[in-house]
Image: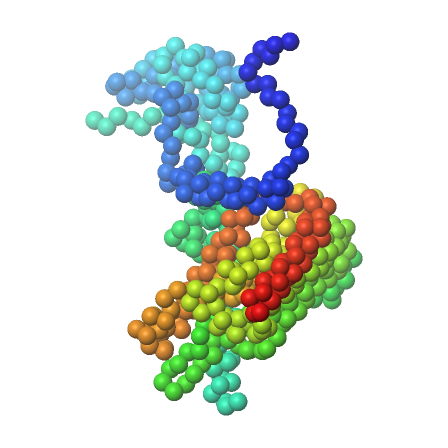
Length: 165
Length: 344
């Protein structure tokens, strides 16, 4: 049968000639190749000091967004928790009290909002599920830590910094 | 011998000892850095600027590690092994001429610890002793991997010592002396022995790789087959001694190769340099040249390590017995014929 791809190569079983059996030319060739790499720019970087640029649709750490007046957008509907395949999100909803209108946009808000970063698989389904555009995975890589409990991020770490006015 | 001479010798011994230890220390750093460059990486750069304090950090780590002596190990031999390894590595430097005689005022200082007339034989004796450290260490560990590593080391070193000795014989026929000082002096300016004995040099180089247990001949400690080889059971500074001994061996064998084949402290244009800088400075420049050559050889050791994969054991023995020894003998015969024809 005719070969379908051009990748077929007939194996050459000729016995090695003298130069090939002497090894040294092949070793010199190898030395030349490694020497070429010696002067090549390293492909690695010193990570924490230097960082590679993320692609535009990179999904990193979550942040809970505020609207243009600095109010938290999240209304604790629970759709993100429901959509989460890793069950990383938990929240406790609370009712907005009079006088808190400048803090929360809707009448209901998340009193506790926790994401377990060890469970999260950074799929981005929470950000797709959110009807209020309140959660985005637009942060950095989640930093390392020593204890499991420190990977459960609460609102203190997730909510965007308040607007400065 | 005057008292002043003895003091000078002691200072020289101390300096050479210190230099070999420092070079061995920084060879570990250089190895990691060179390995990184060959693999398109950056290499250790955390301890100090560019990571130059890395050897100190490694040494500190080695000292602070737990000292483990296996229950079934032979306690005395277990300690003798690494001590012997590092001792034989260190005493090899005694006969190497580091430079021409240094003249300061009326004092003439010989930049060589011992100018003995059997210099090469001494080096050979020390090199053959080196295998005892590995063998005793592997035997005393009472571990099959260690024992296998030790057996490999012993058979490999003995096999390659033969072709090393034979390659040297051809060199001795050219030089006519066993004293390393005289051999170095004969290679004045550019008359390096490598030009007269290229095959002999390649043989010696291959054997030197085998004797120092460097890749591609690092079978005594190949991780993929023997865990850690002869030093599997070693921890703490005893392991450090073994690793250190390897790097000192590398340094000493580079120095021997430079002295025997690559002109030692000689370089083209040394007479002009001697005439223009005086009898005190010119030998020091020679010492610098010698160390430059040694560093190039150490770099070459590392370069080869990241180029050639390890030999299989039967290939190793084939190369030693069926290839290198016949070539070495042929080299002796050809050298003899050429010398006879020239002297006729």
